[in-house]
Each structure stands twice: as C-alpha cells, then as structure tokens.
Length: 165
Image (spheres, rainbow, N blue to C red):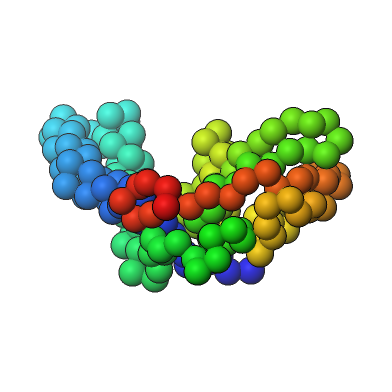
C-alpha cells in the first residue's frame, strides 16, 4: 500500500530544512574528509576512506529520497470545515475505556510520525479508526497488542500560524 502524500506545514518545513542541512552543510564536510582520506594513500586498507565513502552513500540516499518525495507531498495547513470531527492534522485526546488512561495523538503524514511525541501516521490503524469520529464517540481499534476501546475526549487543530482556532 502506498503511503499518503499529506503532510503538515511544520512537517514539510522540517523535511526542507533537513534536505538543506544535508546538501549544503553535511555533504561538503564529508566530501572534504573523503578527499583528505583518499590523499593518504592505499585506499583498500584505509578505514577513514572506507567509512567516509559509506557515510557519503547513506547521505546521498537520504538526499535522493527527500528530493523525490517532497514534490509529491501535499501540505495541509487549514482547519476542516467541521472542527469537531477528526481529520488529518487533528490533535485528539482519548481515554482508554478499560484502564481509564489518557493518551493524546496528533494525526500527521507518514513522513513526520514520531511515537514519542504522539504523532501518528494517518495510515496507522489507530488514525484510520479515529477519522470522522467526534467528541464523546467510542472507538474500537485493532492494535498489535489486541482490541482496545477508546472514548474521544477532545479534538483540536492548529492553524497555519501554530495556534488553535
């Protein structure tokens, strides 16, 4: 299954900044270090040269990926016409119906997921189950750990300037 091409404004700016950092700062540094290592003589036993070649390959792979992916991304930075329903970009507070534990997730694009920050992909089972739900709805989700039921406590959106409407 192909991943969704949606991304938040903040996520797009992070990817753009990463691409600029890789291309304009890190790559020239690695090329300089590689050139210096190559000048040291026998390349077959030169650990520094081998390491720098590998580092350059990995950096170029990421630059290639970002360069191909970014033009296909569609930035979503508007609040939906129904801000009480859960759509892309929503920050959702949920209560686990079994344990009473509260969790907060933000539904974002697959290129900006960060489980530690509570950013989940719109393609994830949790996000798919939440889409179009509203405050006070009950949601059953098939998680890797098994079936879980959640109660939607709140839904908020950030506007393009970073504030809630």
